[in-house]
Length: 176
Image: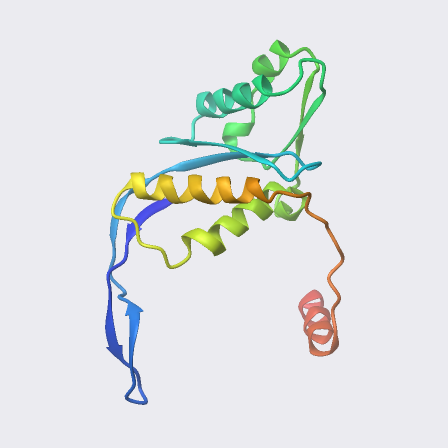
């Protein structure tokens, strides 16, 4: 995630009204990486914010998650196919079958419920926000996670009902 500073100001719209808006220019102040683990039974999220997205950071994050779990609890980790998540057989061997990795198919992020948390973070905290430095970005992410965990509950997957023109558009898209 990028710490982007977006200046705001007043602009005149086509109809002559003046509104406050974000300017199109921005300054980049670096990036942060967020590792997240979702306990599907409770909705609680465990996170670690790092400067980099390296395999060592990923393993360190998982070590922290496992430290908070009972030693006899079997852990199933749902992952996408990002390179950091692969080639961890030596790390998995350390946990002797206690931890199992399951990889989602390409373009099937909807199978990973952690993606719901990332979507909520993007919509509720990051979209349209302005951060003068990485510390402000880190604070915003940590505040979101704290707030989420205070009211956490399991996500309920449900089939989306498609009606009328949505159904027609879906059929058209499938045929193309």
